[in-house]
Image (cartoon, rainbow, N blue to C red; front, side):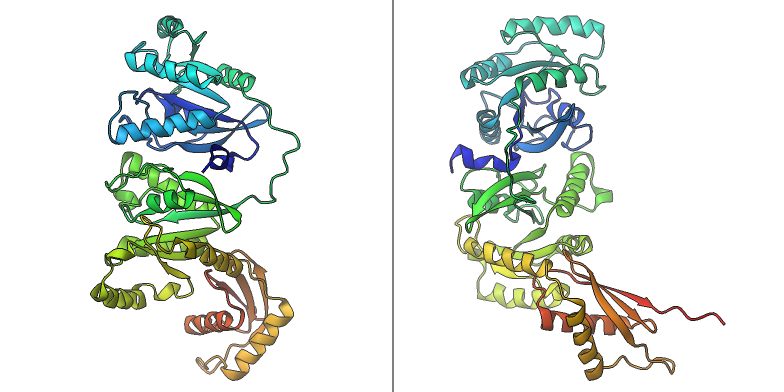
Length: 448
């Protein structure tokens, strides 16, 4: 995949990469720039592992901020791959914000990073973070010795100097091209969700054709959602790789708590959620909770059973029964069997996504809906309850994406009859891959 194809997720907006050693306060500074708590922050080096993009704005100008993992030039193993992600971010950026901890001063690692930044040829803003008072400000000027020009003193935690920093950022970032004609609505937004270690990042990497998310065989490696534009089936898709949902929110702590919130946000941002399940393991309570969250958010759904190469005949027998028992509420969702690591059958994802989007955006005209309701009631009238039989007077579809219907009735409908209406709607009009919501409005009794 060429570099040009990797980062069009930023559209036409210029890109600012934020780099620096671990624990110098990059994510706190990113939150300060954004004016909201987006980046996962915790007082542990290396919480941010992937490069993560955010939309930012200052003085009416939009730009994209890319937060990166702590950059250790002598890294090994996982840390080496984090370093690789930071180098990619710099290569794709229009300018770089190099963050140094002013209270620590210049380290060998900082000098090594400077050498890499000089080679990149990108404009670099040297940012002295943790300058909380005038005494520390004096220490910050020792950073002149890095040879990157005047250090910009800031306190990411308290906001000191952040306005001056943002003014300096706008000076080095190019103006967005005025004639950028982006596709209306942009690429379809797809959230990849699921429990930790089911292969979400492996799937994204295989789709993107590059090592995009840092993948390690440790549950919960991805902490921040990571957006990636991927060309598949002749069109662009925006994939959101999310943190593994480990625990109930009330049990989660620190960066896990914020990662949960970010996962929920990713579901809200998405149009379609791809729920990745480990086909070789039993469907778990966590999987069901994620499903409930997707349904409640009204998002289209595709279920991908990953690690299919590990599913033998016996496991298939039990899986079929688990699907009948645990996925009965989402029988409408397209299901695909894949092996993300090898790429086996991942070509089936695009047709499943397209079917789910089509179902999610299906609109039934008021005339067709009422003709359908008339036939349905004639074939199967509502049961009589307490001597009364509620009737459907009129129906209309009040929303697409997700399809929502409003039924005006002479009385309250049984929950079972509402489920019957939903089932028949699906038989008649499709609605593959999408939840359906039915709102019933009983006619008010006339006051005498």
